[in-house]
Each structure stands twice: as structure tokens, then as C-alpha cells.
Length: 560
Image (cartoon, rainbow, N blue to C red; front, side):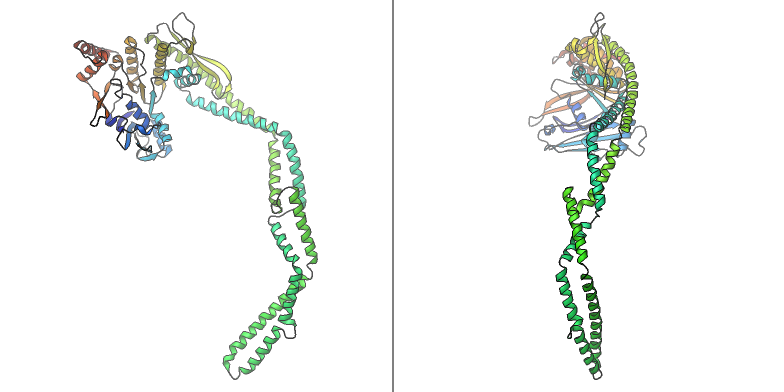
């Protein structure tokens, strides 16, 4: 339930701090005083989108904070979403603080128990904490989708309905897979033939990953074989085979210095270095000789490399693929052949479709049975409420019309009403006047709210268009609902206001600088009598209206 609400610079509210109790709380005030601003502030802090002009004129930032006692569902949501739910998340009395700020420039920030949150998270949690019934909500009763949703809400069938919708989606996906497989069967066979030809052709060629780069490099080397052979032969002659080769000259220098080192030992290091150079020259001459010998036999290899390059080029042109990508093309084509073979298993796809249909019809059948019971209960309860709301003899029915299998199930709900005992029930949109629709909508709202697990319910001027004894009945119904829930009602009717366990009034005044300011205060005793008298008599409060107000409050206190 809602425990406290703090508002700063929101619309025309400068500063407001309120604490709330359980039961039935009424909010009253003159037209334009800002009674609905409290409701707007609660919807704002629970994630409703808003505009920068929500910030009070002249202020830089609006801020709303609301403290709620947590239901089990709300505590579970906090834990699963990673927010602090207290030392013992399962403990009774756990609370959650929701806070949201809005800067005049439009930037909004949200917090749950002190941690940053998103608007989406505020809305998700808000659905578990608060339920608002607006003054124009009865108009939605004319929409078939809203009628179905109200029936499911009243019967507590939201989860089975979601399961049916999910099963329908799975069934349709399986059916779509079958249709696509059947449609593409001939095309797939043609693709398979083409892929098979490609795989056989490339299997015979056997391209390897990286082969194209290797043969290209080898071809370049072999194509320059003459220059390489001439250069290496010349180098071999100069190093070792000419009469005045480098190796011979180094040997002469080494021998001459070796003879001289007996006179000067300092030449020993140079002689040793020349010996090492001779060894390296001998190694170079040996490798040059081997290179020349191999090069003289590379002619046949060049022919084979040229033939391989030509074959890879031809395959690339044939299959419209760079020669370097032929190995990858072969692997992907093999995989595609395997997928086509699996995709052609229509028997498996049709079996999956059949299982999806069976699962859907089983869940939808169970939902249909539950809806039939919920329709009877809802019809009986709304009919009973209609008698209290000055529609004596009226009757309300929920008809379930069979439909083609759909996400919503095997039927569509339709609300029917008869305004008097002798008439037959007809679709709500065709027979209900504006006033009747408002009263029926109120009856359904109260009954649906009693089935709603949310602990805090708000009715924002849902009593518009009624009065007299009907208004008193509305007050009594909301007061009875307040015995099991925390109920708020914004009202302009004294008959409804007199039933409140708590009474808040909203007044608008002009602050310094001429700006309008809305203030809220709790009423009791004489102050409450004065407010009820104002609602009865308008701006002029007389002794008669005060006496009438006291009698009205006294009669509601005596009401069962």
C-alpha cells in the first residue's frame, strides 16, 4: 500500500508531504484546485511519460517520491531486477522508495531504493503497486479487446491467457516453417543439384586453404629462374671457382699473415678471423652450388605450377569466386548441401506443427472452460451491482463467441446488457446510454478491482454523471472495497466523500508573484463538516447545509 508521498515543484504544487493509512481515502476540492495532481504525481513517479512543463513555473526541477509497502510480487520483482529489497526480502513489512526527478530542460532521472532505474522498470514495478481507474475509462468498455481483458482480469486468468498466446505463436512459427519448406521444395532440389555439381568439381580440384598464395609466389620465383640461375652461377664463380676467386685470395692473405705473426703475436687475432671467413665462404660456395644444381632441374616444376595456377583460375571463373576463396567455397557448399537435406525433412516439420497445434488447443480449451465460469460469475456480480446503481431489473451478461484459433484463444468476449427486466440482452455499445454506460463501467471497475491483486486502487472521478442515492451506493461500494484494499477516490460528490475513512481536501491559492499554488490537507471534525457542506451547497455554506453534512456523515458511520 501507499505509505507516503512527497512532492516538490510539480505543476502547481510547491511542496507537499503526505502520509497515508489503509481503507478508503477521498480527495475533494473545488474545480481547478488540482485534485487530480496527486494522481498525476503518483503516475509520474511510477514511470508515466510527461512534458517539461510538468516542472512548476520558475523552478528548475520537479521531484516526486513515493513510499510503498511491498507485496510478495513486488519484493520478488525487486530481487529479480537486482534492486535492494531489504535485509530480508521475504520479511513482512518490506518497503520500497520510488523517486523520480524532472529538470525543466526535460531530463528525467529515476531511482528505486536509492539505486538508478529506468522508466520501464518504474512502470513494471508500478503495475504491481498501483492500479488507476480514470473518469473516461468506461469508454474502453466498447472495445472488444478491452472486454476480453476485463473478463480475464476478473477471473484471474492473465497467466493462462499469456500461456495460450505463447503457444499460439509457437504453433504459427511451426506452421510457417512447414509452408516455407513446401514452397521451397522444388527450388531447393534445383539448388541441391547445383551445389552437388560444384562440390564434385571442387573435390576433384582439391583446393587447399592458402594454396593460391603459395603457388603464385612459386610461379613468380620460377618465372624469374633464368636471371636467378645466371646470378647465382656468377656469384659461385667469384666466391670459389675462378682462378682469382675471393676464397683463394683470402687463403693467400691468411697464409702471409700467419707467417708474419711469429714476429708480432698481435696478428694472431686477424689470422683467426680470416680463417673463420674462409669457413663461411666455403659454406656459401657449397649452398650456391646446391642452389644452382636445383635450379637447373626446375623447368618441369614451372610447367606444373603454371598448370595449377591455370586450373585454379578456371575454377574461380566458373564458380564466380576468387581463386584464393575456392577452399572456403567448397566447405560452405558442403554445409549448405547438408542444411538442404535437413530442411527437406517435411515429416519432422509437420510433426512439430502437429505438436504445436495440440499444445495450443489443450491450453486454449482449459482457458475456455475457465472463461465460461468467469463469464457467469462476472455477469452475476455486475448484474447485482446494477441494481444498487439505480438500474433495477437490468441484466449484464458476458457472451463468449467462438472464433478461429488466435492468440487470444478460441473465443471472443462480448458484453451484453439489458436495461430492464423485460428486455433481451444486447451488445453494450448498442443499448447503453451515456449515463448507463458510466454506471455499468463503475460497477465493472469496482468488481474488477476486487479481483486485482494490487494493494492500492485509485478511482479518479469515476462517479461523474451520477448523484443522489446512486452516488451514496458508489460511496458504500468503495468503502466496502477499502476493507480489503487501500482505496483512493477523487470525487466531487458529497455522498461519496462522506464514506471516506480519511478525507483530504485540495485548495488552490495565489502565492507571492501571482503564481497559483495547490495545497492539500487532511480533514476531520468540524473542518470535514465544512467541506461536505461546501460540496452540498456550493460557495454559500448555511446552517442547513452544515446540518445536512453532519447527518450525512453520521449516516455513513452507521452504514454496515
